[in-house]
Amino acid sequence: MNIPPATPSRTVAVIDVGTTSIRMQIAEVGQHGVRTLELLSQAVNLGHDAFSSGEISRHTIEACVAVLKDYREKMQEYQLRPEDVRIVATSAVREATNRLAFIDRVFVATGLSVEPIDVAEVHRVTYRSIQPLLRAQPSLFKSVSAIVEVSGGSTEVLMLDQGNVASTQALRLGALRLRQMLQSFQVSHSRIRQVLEAEIQSLLEPLVEQIPEGRDRNLVTVGGDVRIAARELLGQSPRDDSLLELPMTLLAGFVDKILGYTEEELVHELQITFAEAETLGPALLAYQRIAELLGVDRLLVSAANLRDGLIREMGEGRHWTDDFHRQIIRSTWEIARKYHVDEDHARHVADLSRLLFRELLPEHQLDVRYETILYVAALLHEVGGFINPSSIHKHSMYIILNSELFGLTVDEVQLVGLITRYHRRALPKPNHPIYSTLDRDRRVTVSKLAVLLRIAIALDASRSQRIRKIECHRVRNRLIISVPNVDDVSVEQLAMPSARSFFESVFGLQLLLRTQVRATASEPSSQL
Image 1 (cartoon, rainbow, N blue to C red):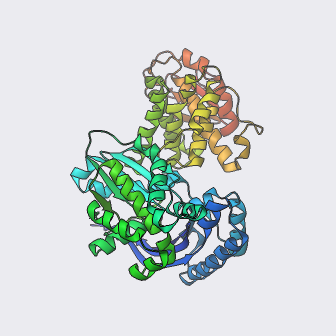
Image 2: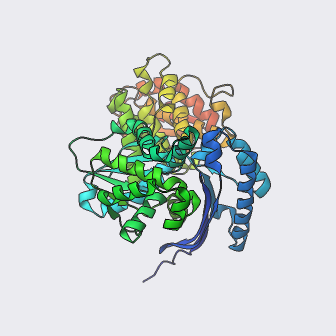
Image 3: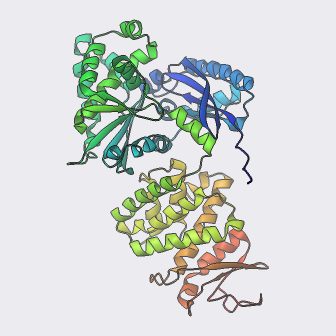
């Protein structure tokens, strides 16, 4: 019996440029999971700058540069290659008006590339981290679960219904934002709770609409503040493989207590850092208010965090699992139905697009994630008809760019929008908005996928879904698409010319369509 060789372990690192600190986690990943080797943290004032003035001060930028220089030495100590390190920045950098100047300064000073992480990616990492924990407990998995993290700059809410993504929210409810609001209004210590509750309540209004009625509900919490509360109240921290129950009665008393302390007293009493003391009270009060809105009597505290999730993905590869792909498609169908697309046509075009993507893999050479992006674009290519059938391709792009597709980053949603933009009419041009801002690789990707979508649409030109199987054959400088079990493809041939010219300009092959493949590689019977 041949035993396959074990996957070698790999040392990787994630640096999280957050609102109050820059944290570095170095870990060994392999077939046995993740083993943390070292954790580092340095306080910074990114959130103070970004949430008060809208930009990061030069002093704070240089402080961040100094921290990252130290972390670079640690990377060299572990002999980490660039591909073994990921540096992400959260809301403070993402929202700063001078974020590009910040990123460029860090690169010039350290050679390190900081990537503002997209909210959609945060939701993806959270979903992949929490969903297995819910699945392990059937009663939790079958109910509605709100997965919530109150961070320094924002509150991320991921609503799951029987394990499926029901909705996502990114609220401008951040513990550090709240603390700064108190300071700017010069709120007296005796009125802190009253002012915080009023502000939290107003910021939670968008969440109220997402709460289902008449269903069992759970609140799964993610974040350092709630883990501090669990440690103080329960004497333990949550484990990686389970959720820790924290009764609301205990949390309510703890919140009352800590809101009566100054930050200096919290540091002394709880043995936490000043950065943690600054956000602890507002964050826990926000969790308490969310629990009251949901009507739950306990919090389920998770050990999951962004760094762990990103490290796990680096070990597994940043691929999309089958389950994650299904969640993306479910989210896409919600948008498609909202805008009343022809579901049979949309589904069939999407299926044909998938077949073409797989058949033409040697030509386009795109990785499997782009198959999902093409499938999403195919499902949504006619949503613009809800606005006006005239210029439907432009209206579809507009709707897509202004919609939230679970699991897709802003860049990926932009790709979907551009693919639908070019599913008909004009080919991509350098002066087209958005397309003109893309780099070469993304421009080529848009063209490759858009032309596959055009072909798929032409193959269902009759809207009868009669073409269910295709085969692609390469004969010299021709690509022949054969359609078995269909006697006449004249309707499809009439719809194909724009796809044909687009295909030739992208792949350099002449595109032909016929009903069946001849036994010999002779000239095809039908040419478009």
